[in-house]
Amino acid sequence: MPPVRGAPLKLQIGLAFLAFILIGAAEAGLGVLIPSLRGHYGVDKATVSFIFLAGTCGYLLAAFSSGPITEKLGHKTFLMLGVCLFIFGAVIVILTPPFPVVVGVWLLIGCGIAMIDAGLNSYVAELPRPTKLLNYLHAFYGIGALTGPLVASTILVLNISWNLTYLVWITVALIVLAGFAILYDSRSKAHHEVTGSEGRGSPLGSVLKMRAIWLTAFFLIFYVGTEVSLGNWGYSYLTEERREVPLLSGWFITGYWLGLTLGRLTLANLAERLGNKRLVQLCLVGTVVGVLLIWLLPFTLASAIGLILAGFSLGPIFPTIIAIISEEVPASLRSSAIGFLVSGGSMGAAFLPWLAGNLAEQFGLWSLMPYIIFTTVIMLGFWLALQAQSHKKDPTVKHPVES
Image (tube, rainbow, N blue to C red; front, side, top):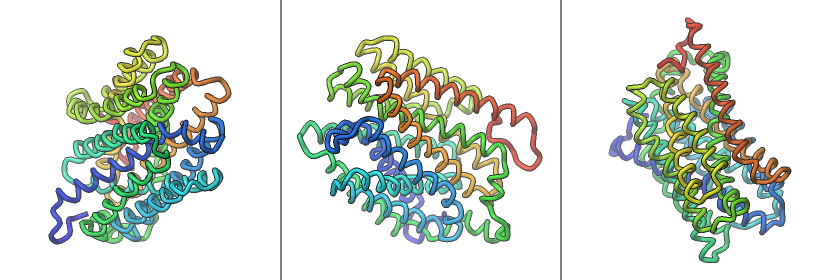
């Protein structure tokens, strides 16, 4: 996506960073608002988790539409459409309609977030030095994610209605929408490559034939789901299971997202020395250690350290995988591949927290930490399957797991 006349590339990248702050804040802030949502609508943990399930449907819709829509309309229109869906859904949430309507609205919010996520990942992946830029992009998601709980908890402490948190997100979203309209070009470099070289076929169809893509997608589903489950339910776990002070718990969750951000900023360069395989394995081990600290040591300090360590370890995995894939798949398939993986992976951000909420309702919030360890082990299983796939040396496509 070359910069339009009068719009330097740095401004486009800066706007992408701001958009990731927005989606990070909106997703992470929801975790702090869950108790207020339950209280306002009088629903239990399992019922409120239908919000995440609706988000899953939105992510799934985006997963299968992002590539074709981007190829047809271009990044600019695609991104603006995603922001508009988010704004529309947030306006409805502010109006506090009946809970079934709120669940339906979260489908739009989830779809909008997934479209912004996929579109900007595809955009940044086309730029020089994409690995570092993608880690920085996702680091700004972490900045938003550590800001979101702070904004939401502050609003609650000031006795302002929980739904007005979305007024803050709408304000930022309007700035992002205007920026996309002014700074971004209508069509991307990848679009012209597709239409000029392989426009006769279906890029998404070609992507879906790759076994490595499917293994990567399932890995990312459990990765993103683990990341968001811990971030969204961690506040409820600390306040209800451990009886921590609400404001202090909000700061602990902020520490988790801060660790996520720092991991992406500091470990990206380490990947070049250790190799992607070793870095991911090290991060998976760090995640398990952090969760064990929270679970087995019921002390305030241990919870804080464990959350920071878990976030720090989870941080660099996602953007590094996306950067590798962007270099391995053909340029004509890049937009569809990244769109599918990002949106498909984001499904985990909805489905796994929904499942965590149901387990919490059935067995209690103590089940959150064993659940996180279980999902991390599944991640490791898919990662090992990807390693096995890489050794087959499929001549039709390079594999996204080679270091």
